[in-house]
Length: 287
Image 1 (cartoon, rainbow, N blue to C red):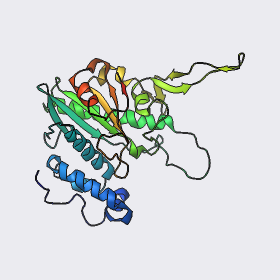
Image 2: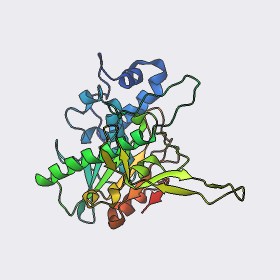
Image 3: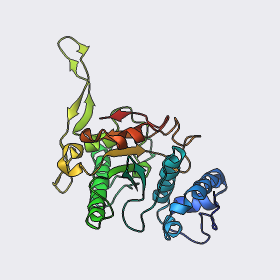
Image 4: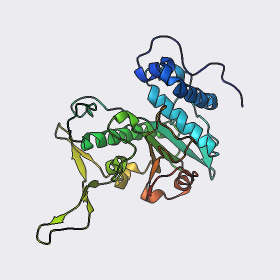
């Protein structure tokens, strides 16, 4: 394997505090080393602006590298098409399997996910605002997909994997005790309910409420049934993870911070099987 001619990190001022802390803070030495190791294996897939863009979008670029190197570890022969289209692709059964990485942040405007508060008080978890970050991510990538389709970069016969990292949403920890939030965003599954019968004084069987949509503060409704809609057929699989440069498994795709997978019901094919078959990589699968 060839060695990159440059390190990942660039000296000088930058806008992203995570980039700055990882590069310069004494406690960031281990994380910095890990990022540079990813870069050593990823750099041949990077576009010409990758390192510079990381100075303002560090976590997004980290996630792209982490995803690619994990796939390389599992014998995917990745290639980059060019400056347009999804991040990279691999050939699968004579078809291209595209991978698109996205790491949404908390958003802005009235539906922004609020910052975490450490004031010793209980605060309501902003579930619906977090779900909107996921629905916005897939809407954005849907537009990117159809742009690539219109330009002939992507074929309708190709498979498409959307890899979402939710660490930047703030509240979406990767260890949910209930149905993962990214699944609640793409299927009409609401909160877990445990009924208590006041007559018998006994708990009854728990169930998930039906939640077909989320209402934004503007009054507009956003569907949570994306994966049941015809418009989502472009996406074969959603891969979800919460890793960052300081919180990752000892082995890529290992048993800590493991991804989850959601497969389109009509796409239980080579794409789904290949992603779900990455050894030790899957925490839970829903089809």
